[in-house]
Amino acid sequence: MTYIVTLTPEQMTSNEDDWLVSEDFTKGLPTGLDTSDTGTRLVFLVRGNPARSANSGRDALAEHGRFISWMGSVQRINTVGPVDRSITIEPMRRCPEPVPLDGPDGILASLPSTHRGYVERALSGSAGHFGTETWRALREALVSRHPELSRYIDWLLAQLNPLHFNVEDAADLAWQEQRDAAQTLTRVTDFPYSALSAWGRPSSREEPYLAGLIPDPVENSLIDHDVRVGLSREVPLFDDWRQRSDVRCDIHVLEDSAGRRLEVVNVNATPVESRLGTDMIYYHHPTHSFVLVQYKRLEPRRKEYRVNKQLLD
Image (cartoon, rainbow, N blue to C red; front, side, top):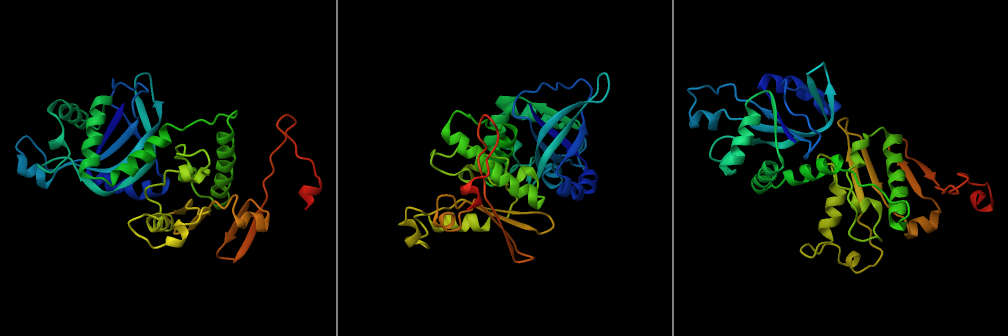
């Protein structure tokens, strides 16, 4: 199912400050609403239209219409009582700009009549949902009119459908180890797990784990963006980089609501690693200090690593 939760402007305003910090919201569902764990499990949070009434015409809708303001994913469906249910939405992300649903330029106007009817029915109460075919039509309309939403949708869907590693596959095993290293950084720095949790297999088995990360759409990925754009054919800012075989673009920048910044750079199999002999370099800007971390793989069966000359070196 793809869900729609409709809130009044007052409800939206009173919750938004909390959502920016907690990134989650629990919403009760109407009694009898189907809660089958199928479909995308995406959620669109819509700011309702207080001016809408039976006498409201098309002009009123255009001026006081409904807007998609937030997007999220159904993390779980909760049993409240014998018949009542609620959904927990986590994580959540605010849209760059509210997306109008009503009026000639709204999303509903670009939907085929059948799918528009299903979306309207989901919008008629405080919470509703629709099926896969209607979701496909809605996604096409959203991305066509608001291309910036594509990365939000891709990120949320990757959160909901994580890929599983095959421990018998060499590439998957290497990516799993690199994932553990990257997530160690988020734990050490107290960044949310979701910051690095959306991932798709890179196009090449030789690429590092970071190359498959789908960036959090609200992170400040300036370095990643600049390097990738600079290496494109249209913007020849780094011609000397493009001609080298050891160029690495897998740089990811995370920034939280307090302004703290975490930059993750994969330097595996580069001169940096061979010179320092370390697997992780953690630089703390406020104290101008380094922590060097060496990773060792445990012996598969005994799950141990012996203290030997290599470790001591």
